Length: 113
Image (cartoon, one colour):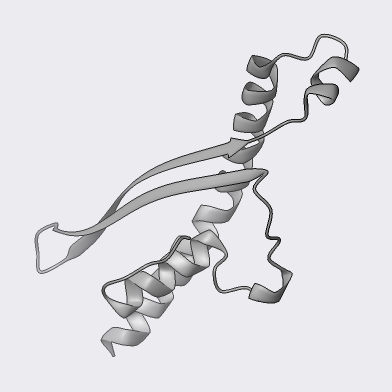
C-alpha cells in the first residue's frame, strides 16, 4: 500500500501526484500490477530569505503479462513492452507533474498566509 506521512502539506502533494486523493471505490484489487515509489521532498535555503523545494523520486512498476499475450503479438518481447511502458509513463508524468507542482505552490502560498 502506498501512503504519505509527515507534514500535511507534503502529504497533500504526495496524494495529488500519486492519485491517492481520488475515490478509493474505483480501486481495482488484483495482483497483476505492483507499484513501488519512494519520494523525498526537502526544503533547501536559496538565499535572500527564500526557500526551494527539492524532490527525489524513484518509481518501480511491475506488471505481469499473460504468456499467451506475448505469444499472440508478433515480435513482442519483454524488453519492447518495458520500453513502451516506460515511454508512456514518462509522458504522463511530464504532463501531470508540472500541474501538481503548480498546485503545490499555490497551496504552500495559501498555507503561509
